[in-house]
Length: 279
Image: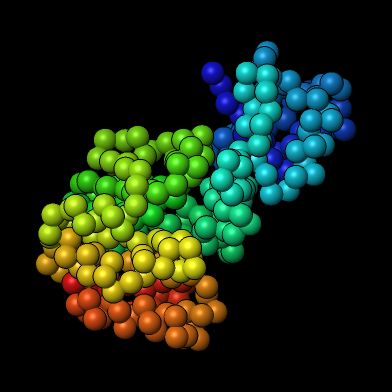
């Protein structure tokens, strides 16, 4: 069935067209991937014969500035999961971002989540690489690695709530392409089952230290080092641009533990809020 994604910006565009008495409006209803023309009337926005959004519906969407609504089969539901914590997709000028309990899981200021994730992939991935993507979230870095020419990408995500949201996110569709393998589980546990020297590059984008301190441990860094092939490359997102720029005991600790695990050329990458390293 057709799916349409509405948020403050495109709902307001529809309301503006209705207010001007226009017969139609050009909108993106797939979160900025494409645009097409839709009919409007004094009753509202016509998405298709089964999906009509009234003026009241559109005004409701406009009020919720950080929410995306999925419209299909005559229903309008926010893209969120409240089963355990509060997980949602939020709109940007580009790809949507993942937010968990009010915390943004992507770099979005001055960029968009897909662009910043692509930058992370570019730090580590080369054409032909076998790539391990730890804590993949919406899968943007894995998709970017695949587009860079990676031969194979193994992407791991712990949260079933996140995997449910990305299954509804048009920007995550390429995770279904040949060459990308999705696994649900703990990166900390699963990496121990992987063969030594089996990856050319690793992208590591863990949650905050307070939520997953084990993913910042020397023990885990040693496992990353073990599964990387000779001269393998790592990009590790650490977060907080102020901390990266000025230096802190936290980021310095990350660098110290990476070096203790055997990594060399460990360097801060300020604009991506992370650290690059090489085996």
